[in-house]
Image (cartoon, rainbow, N blue to C red):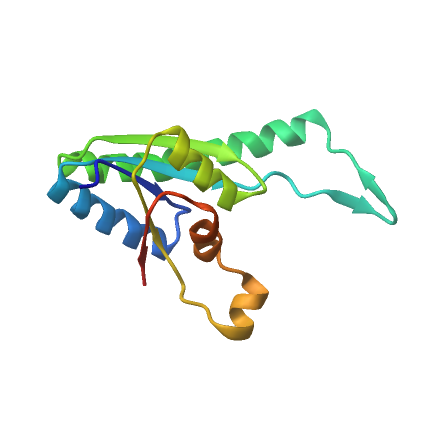
Length: 148
């Protein structure tokens, strides 16, 4: 039924839940997994009323930290998947639009299912913090398995 799962992860508790469920599902279906982690870019630095540019070293250091976090996270995911006999590929991107990065990755890698966990926020909490899962659901043409 499903042959290629996209599993966005960020290293939090919900990521582990997504990883565990996706690995079990992929093993059962004989599917492969693409793990995706998206890191935010450096925020705009504003001093008084003007935006200030970061120096090149600051950008490079941020990229190094993001890459290191992605390597560690996707490395753990890969180890767990491979231990279960599931083919795994890891992808990493720096973006300020995580929702679109997930949708784009699913399309670019020809994934046929996205597996995500949600906090299950409602009401004011959802309004304040937003819902990455709801946004992906609204914009993706790929089916979405939501874990709660």
